Image (cartoon, rainbow, N blue to C red; front, side, top):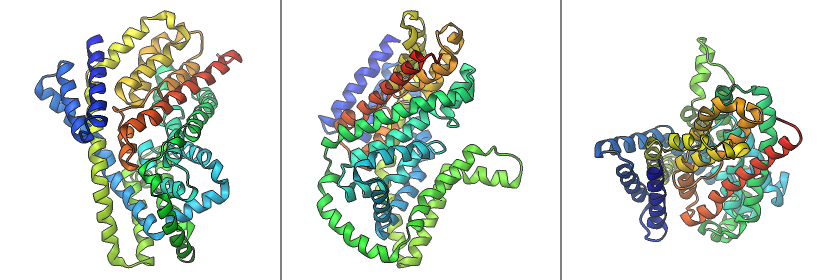
Length: 443
């Protein structure tokens, strides 16, 4: 276990240096790092390649088409001025100073039925338009949204991870929901405050182009006010979210309606419907011939995102298949002196090692389930500690890390200083919330 963990740490350091210092392209750096790590943890050549390809394909099979359709929606919104209209509406409703909070709350609500990656892809044009119109750094707006999205995915049923934790710990789902709702307030606040006050000093190339771009957007906005409808602008984003939400809350059954909604709630299908709505909106208001140009632009822009995200998934797959999470779980569960913090620390180590919130949640709950009766608190508090620990920390072995890198062209070292540290702040904020509940007598 110690050797495998050491190998992972060494490879992560080499990966960071190869990308940031030696300027090796992330796609090749991730693949070479995955292969080298496979050999170091004891895989033979064939096994290493098999695990790498499985991780690559498993990542791409659900995200590739979604990214393309999401990029197409973004192209349409940019071309029609829809992103401008949406951002103007949000600015009027909440004001410039409250944009990070509005995005955090939006992410929190949206991500209950929708996967984090899918939701962020759908909202990317809104994030960038808001950043331009309000002259707020894109990292502030984007990471505020990411904070809300991640909290729901990690803490709130009916998302799969928290449901699995409740089942493994035999926790009362209603009580877990109440406790995690309180914890979620602290976690979202920690993530948004970090983005708002710390990340504003990181100015990207995207932000430097704002002055010229805002003038273009203002001109486009004047024209779009006469031609566009805010409702039609929102439909390509809202309809997929509603469809995926229905699928999350509605039990599929053998009826025709049940099967239909089960099909429509599949993320790829839901986002494809959103893309079709965007296409129809564009065709009625613009030249039909231009729709193919937007589609081609979306595919070209998506290719690099898809490949690097897939490579990140392959790298994470090698780490998970090395079995380091089981070894770490056994090691930490044999340290009873950690007491109150054991679930938090175990989940944090698993997230740092594997880059997967779901693996962290289920792994920690599986290991600690048999110990729940020995802990000085209820299974619901244990679940909140596991959830809080699962935020710590996201880095190069997380597919969302690379999604952010490509969507906004964020340098790797900047992501480590902003997104990675934000996840640590969020985890510690959750731990503080659980500690407050414990001191107030909630066990």
